[in-house]
Image 1: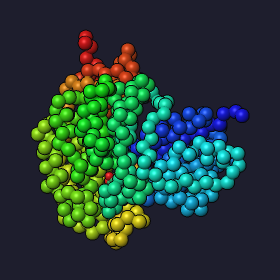
Image 2: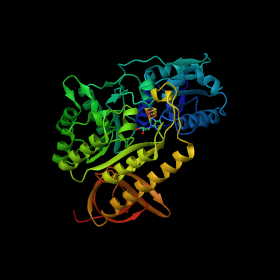
Image 3: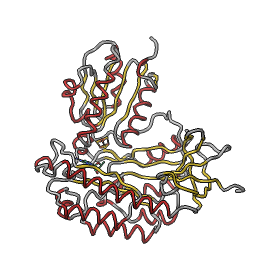
Image 4: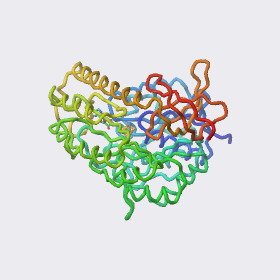
Length: 434
Ligand code: 5AD
Ligand code: SF4
């Protein structure tokens, strides 16, 4: 029998991007080929997100769009698959397989069965022990993701994740070290440790900061990053590590979501605005140049103009490098779905515009202040801009830089002087003679 080929597409967060790599490696190890073009594929697999209604609407649109490849097996996985289960067959009539995040090991056989004409299948049983160790590695980028925790039990009142991603679990520390070894062997210079709530990591006696200590000691990976952190779980030991070594990059993504204590409490976030600001103070006391990024929601039920002003106030005080900002989207089954979604859509939109304007202004100020400085850049890709070829990379603080260089390649770390800005990307020049 000739080998079967699968085409994959991914929506959603970094965790989904990592899961898509896991899916590729599971499929390849079971003899499937991975294609970049859906028209030749025996099966199409779309990894989806449920976090906002819009994310689901787009994924359903795309699935129906991909249904035009008649005779091809169509499968959906990820958070929307878990949330909607067999309800998806009504929304996407051409669909054959629905598989939730704990069921990826079963996908190759489900896809084979569907290719040979067996009927529809729904795989959405939850299994709180699944952590997905890497089997093999197909990517070659210098900058890679690795999930170290999965699931979430925080139950923020607006959030669907605990319902679709299941119970919180951590990958065993020795397994993390081995996975980093595999990534390193395929060219990784930088690993971003992933989890919906990564600082809550715990495997036996080993907490998140201990895990980083082990990675620093037992691997020679150049740079370590991590995503996403909940303020409730922040361990100041992380800032001590950042102060000791640049291998733990001085950047933290710390969602604050809302600036008023009243809304934070309704969101069940488990901290106050002053508690959040204290964390930032402690971080900056130990690593003054730390770059901070965040997530913010506007228009949560009952949010007043005064509440929103407090959100803007946090932005002005902390001065984030950048932020992901969202209009509140009611999700069926969450605690907040019991509250009236009473902030009119045009008010949500204007608050979002105001918030984004403040974030952009501060971001520009932070970046402009770096012009003329010399920074270590890890190059991660080649890009073409007009007729020019550049190498793209990141500073330790996760800021984008383009460098013109003929004799460098992705994976190299170079010293660069930041010359100018093109929107929110630095144009840098390598310092030669090193
Ligand atoms: N509506 C709007 N934004 C949401 N997020 C999570 N749930 C919702 C929702 N129901 C945002 C949060 C989270 C990010 C991944 O998505 O800011 O940190
Ligand atoms: Fe990621 Fe959450 Fe979206 Fe799932 S619902 S893909 S965990 S952002």
